[in-house]
Image (spheres, rainbow, N blue to C red):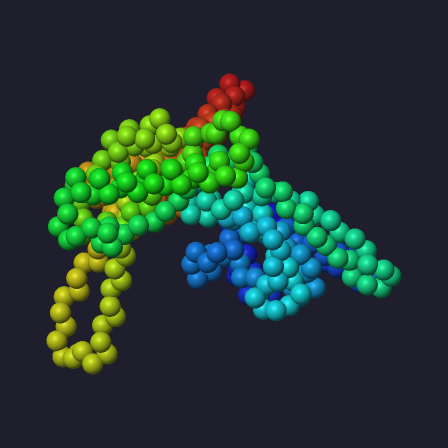
Length: 323
């Protein structure tokens, strides 16, 4: 099944509009395999595909799109004999936690198990040894530093954490393959929850490890603890109606969208919604090329419009010449 927008496919399943074509004869002699390229992890109310949507007669599902390697086939949680394997990406395409898992590929073997019996399968996993090493760790400064710690204390703590991550990673690589003489510079990502503490310059910090890691500019990722607004009490008196407070945007994409819309000179070529989508992919999904892809998309869209207008003008000029 080729990739479809997750919320759209989710709705289609809910409305029972997905139709499966199955063999009409010798059903038990077939092996039913589904290759799916959708969100498996829940990203919203309908922005994913639940495992329960897969029909019971499907024997094996190759779940693509997700980057975390879970190649060992496991029976889905509903207890039906439907197995799911998630090979994951063969290289680290983003600096997320799931990419830190050891990468594998596999060979699927299917054999008939006698007449009238369902075929059986086995996946031989093969560890990938040429993947660039990657380490991920998430820390909260409030768990390690005293309240009121200054920038120097924060930087020293993060330096020690990063150095320990690199040392541990290289030690693990050496133990796994003692014959390896040369190792690629590793990727390192330290996700830092800094609520109540100062931040430091990410680029300056990266220069300290420029000769040790492959991503010195992207080592640190600062984020604040999310605070959810409490729901108003039902017992609140209705006799007085206070003025509603102006809601503050809680996400960076909302902040950027509001800044664009409130600017004196609003962008002509790029719609704020496109900015918002690109920044959301960049910050939440850690897609490093989200902004550049958005620019290329807008450029192509503008070029198509200009060419269309040019063709229309040429047609009009030709008609005038003929007259």
